[in-house]
Image 1 (tube, helix red, strand yellow):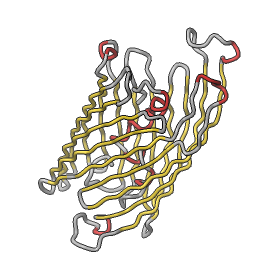
Image 2 (cartoon, one colour; image 1 turned 120 degrees about the horizontal axis):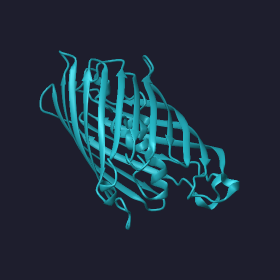
Image 3 (spheres, helix red, strand yellow; image 1 turned 90 degrees about the horizontal axis):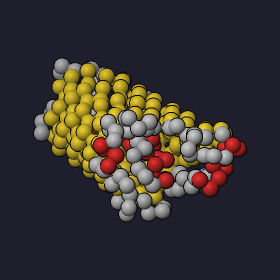
Length: 305
């Protein structure tokens, strides 16, 4: 997810680009929004052929029995030749069922729901000088702990879903990097989508995600997902095409296309995403590749949300 040139967004991408498989990474209010628990493992290798960043993430989210409380958490590692981030977060969420009418899902109280979440985050940044990048012997290797908090709200109404969240609520600048590293500024994520059900097994889901920060960096992503889910035979599959456009003037990597495919076998999900950056970098690398393996403690009707 390190596919952006701007400082703040480049710091955020290692986690948040993986939201295609797990919207909880964007918004803490999604922890426990479903009455199902999800364990998800994701690995990503960026810019194959150019020694790009590699990211690995393990997440879990659940809803407490007979309660409207959701819990979640993840741990991750993001590694580049100079920087290694090791971090995680713990989330508390509260869900307010709003449905009292006709049944849309198997649990009528989930047809309409308003959710709020807050997370405590921490990451350890380890910096190592690389030949050609840093000539100061005093900067050979060092590390620092970085705290953070994020908050979010999430709303579902029958086929509609949408959320707004903010991260980097604690401005922090690692002292070990001096002036070479900016503050991780307040960053927002706004997303929305709608599920159009053709029948009990086929769904078309358009959605959009808009990222922004206080410095005016912006990114828009448009997604179209087709899902087919055979609940009787415990099998399903989905395919998605995403278009990502960085709205910053002069950004060296303005456009990306991301085709995604996924399969469900009973309670297991397996998915693959390929990120093709539409600039001169595309001819110099083999793209960015991402794999996800998940286990749901129920048979999910919706894939990867």
